[in-house]
Length: 185
Image 1 (cartoon, rainbow, N blue to C red):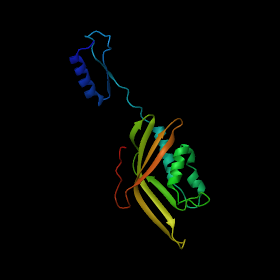
Image 2: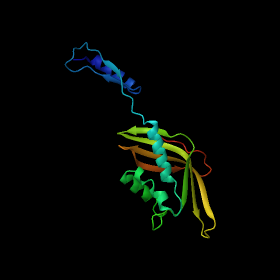
Image 3: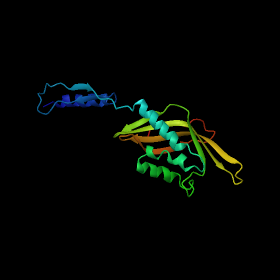
Image 4: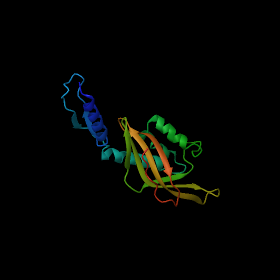
């Protein structure tokens, strides 16, 4: 059985090394007191491959690009979402969809930088897509349009097999605020 001093050393070593992705294996209870503490590199968290990130990026753009009066331009992204995520996404559109399911506005999302992986947990990857979001809608006289362009970050959580969007959150920073900061959540 390890001595108190060996356990204290092992605990201190384990605590110090956790931040550097190293696994520490303590001696078993039935191991001799002289058993060394073994240190092995921990498995790195699996990174999402570039092809998957590219596919998610296209899905995000497909979800956010829609044309006023064209239900198909909104619905074309439904297959990229889990059923629950699609329901949440469409709830976000409540009040902006006509009785035929078409958007009452036009919207375009344009990337302004590379996607960033902001977290991974339990098989779900969180990505941030920085860009600009332009929204426009007709004014009452129908011959003119109101338009606003925002700096935005689109956060998505994806996972599963095949990979599907499990949540999509739009964060805007206003039309003159400069680029939105990307937050780890």
